[in-house]
Structures are given as structure tokens and as C-alpha cells.
Amino acid sequence: MKPSPKLQTGLDEETYVIAASSDFLIGGVWGTRRMRRKDKEITDLGEMKENLTTTKFVTIAMCSNGEPYLVTLSHGYDEDRNCIYFHCAREGKKIDILRANNLVWGQALVDRGYVQGACDHMYSTTQFRGRVTFVEDMKEKEHALRVMIESLDDNPRQILKSQLTPESMQRVMIGRIDIDYMSGKKADRVIISQRKA
Image 1 (tube, rainbow, N blue to C red):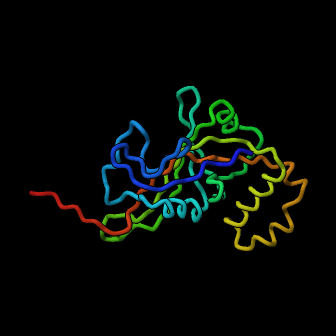
Image 2 (image 1 turned 45 degrees about the vertical axis):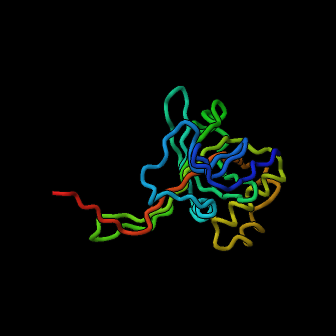
Image 3 (image 1 turned 180 degrees about the vertical axis):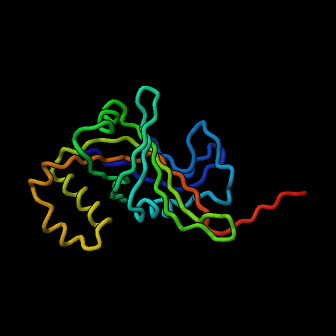
């Protein structure tokens, strides 16, 4: 398995790159505009990763012949490898699209709730781009399932003991999204906008 790109930090205002290497970019995509609402932009890599770690699902968008397709997946985020693992059926529309075009965009959303009487909603999101690979190596499959179970289940030891068997690992299809871009946005306080009369 090829290791995922390592992340770097540092701000370069000229090219709007918060963290970049030849394989990884955080905060802006070359050739795109910067976030308009700077007060809502997440620039801290740790905060972006925390969203991926704490959410129970992510939504990913893919494309086939110019037509978008969207799915929501339960997942596990592996911070060391900077990848997202998910499990799925071996056949279906999602698999067909990903085999033809493995580039995906996704979002992890932490919903902090609507603020009654303020007409505002608190949230934190991480947007990401990456490529999907389907995992065949049994050791990585086991690792992926451990990452997912430990992030999703309240009692992972019991599940790992009873359900993580060679037979179950052979049957399950595991996808890995190797992330090469991240950005983040949040609303963590009520902002009342008033128009001038």
C-alpha cells in the first residue's frame, strides 16, 4: 500500500496555500477563489481532522459522464494515513462510478444545532478531495475495519472480538479515500446581520 501524503503547515498568501506539498493541499485549490467569509473559515488542520474523526458519516460526490452522484457513508478516519475508510457492497452504482472515475469530493458535517430566535445554525464542516482505492490486502482490511469500528461503536472490543473474523474480512468490500485536499468552514457564534434602511 502506498502511504498517504503527509501534511505540512504554513501560510502562503500569494498562492493561498495553507499547507502544501507535491501531493497535498489545504485551504484552497489552485485556480479557485478564496472563501468569502473569512470569519467562518477553518484554517487549523487539527480542527479539520477533528471533524473527520468525530462525525459518524461523510457525504461524497462523484461523477459519471458529466452527471453527479452523491452518497452518504459511515466511515472511519485514519489520521496517520490521512485517509477515510468505508465499507460497501461489492456491486452497485457507486462501485461502477468509482471504478470509472475514482476522484471524489466530500464533506463531514458536525451539526451544532439551530439557535432558536436567532435564525442561525451552528456547525463545523470539513470539505475534502481524494481518490478512492478498493482495498484487497487482508492486513489493511483488518486495520480499516478496526478504525471504523473503534470510531463508530460504543463497545468496540466486543464487536472486534465477535465479528472481525477472516471470513468476514474476506466478504467485505473496503474503500479507502486518500485525501489530497481539505478546507473547513464553521459557524460557532450567532451573527446578526442588519441591513441599512
